Image (tube, rainbow, N blue to C red; front, top):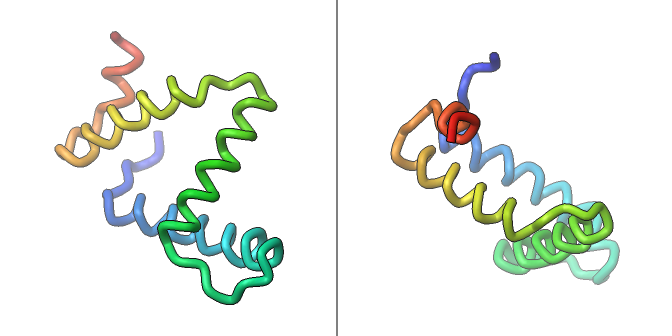
Length: 87
């Protein structure tokens, strides 16, 4: 099992993902040199909803579960995945 990430590492990972998304998708589509963080997150989540719809994934269930993971991670609980499997 891979070592668990710190919350700082998790935030950095999504920061890199959003950076790639902004550079490759938003700037090209909107012909804009500046995309603020809130716009990037909003567009990323909108596109994620389209992806989930096209792949018959329940975005609301995923959002709910991700929020529970976030709360556990924020509280410093490393075994949140084990708890989800057992419940």
